[in-house]
Image (cartoon, rainbow, N blue to C red; front, top):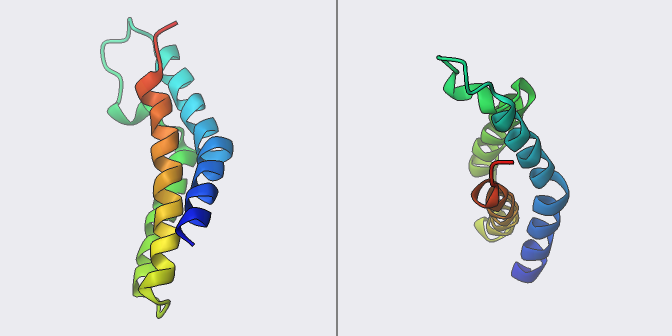
Length: 96
């Protein structure tokens, strides 16, 4: 089951989360360096913040659900791997 979670996490990170990360990276680079004040939250689109709120809410609901912890561990591992994979996009990004 852990192997399945790793595979799902990799696929989710590659096909979904990485696309969001690339859009955010482009948004960061497009922010005008001449602006004096840029909001710290400007690197995310409004939709991304809604996605984050939704993920937090679902995480809390899963945690409070009667689903056995062994199954939740698989879900958490898959999501964690996907997010870790996509976060590498930020670490590897270089200014154009």
